Length: 95
Image (cartoon, one colour):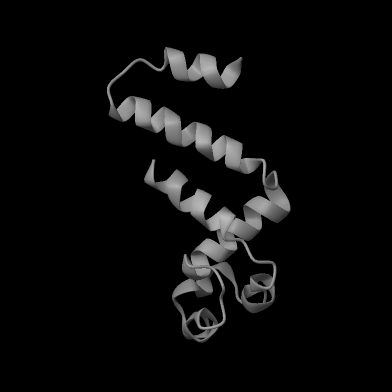
């Protein structure tokens, strides 16, 4: 549930200009010295990781409709957290 909220926020704060900043960094450089320098120019409030993940979801996965998938995951998690049956949640999102 928290991961879906993080990803929802990251996608909603997506900025195409962030791609230029982290485009020269590798995935494993998130905790390196190059990332520390790049963080100052990232527009995403979720940092370098949020900028990378939002870029992946928006540009390469489903685009902004991925918000629907993440919303469904959030509500399914909410139903599990409340210890209710998933029947209503599944019926809502599948039909």
